[in-house]
Image (cartoon, rainbow, N blue to C red; front, top):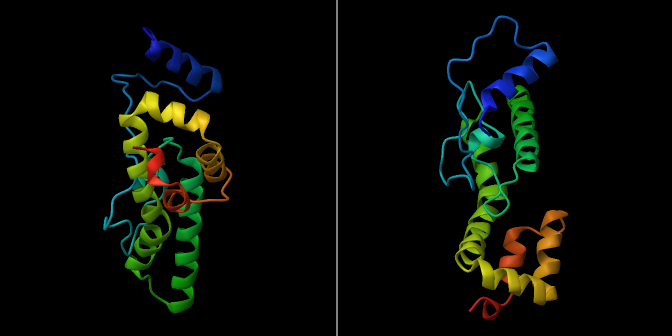
Length: 158
């Protein structure tokens, strides 16, 4: 879009959020995808959730679910810290690694196959019901990527 800054500024004015604000620069930023193993996601004073923690799906780029889920984990850790009297800064990171990042690791392997063989993977997903159904179950929350990683025979990909 040629006039993106103008449209964005007009949007803010219409919403009443641009009183006296002057845009000098306006640029987008990439959202980190797939999280990172062993990354420090919490300290004694802060807990990083959602996109800021790199919790976006490696295949779809979706991050709302992971933002909400990591927020739930953070709230649970904070509640337990009030009960204990101190914050275990590693507890949140461990929970994210165990429940989200491990699944992202499997999704990352699947993403490499899907994106490196895009035409072939499209045809596979279109023709093989088991692959189609498995991905739909991930989207609906019935399966994790780890579940389908181990359920779909590797022969379909090679």
